Length: 93
Image (cartoon, rainbow, N blue to C red; front, top):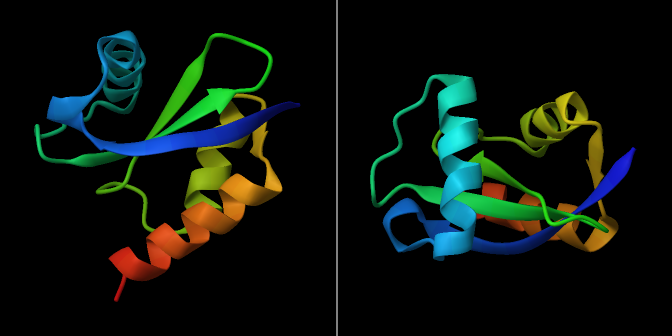
């Protein structure tokens, strides 16, 4: 399994150009049309130039995020997991 590292949380409309294709691909895969202000957590697959987006409006728990990553043969590194846990706690208040 590959390791995934959180590089940032962005609004879809403010994504750096190099990340937009990954978001479009994942949105198509999930049949999801993200709004420009929707937040997305961007994870880099360590040792590659690939990124994995997690749409924070669609995923509300760390378990659901980890399940999506497992489908891509990836797991969160410890620091990224702790960060996402905090993000989900804040979001779910």
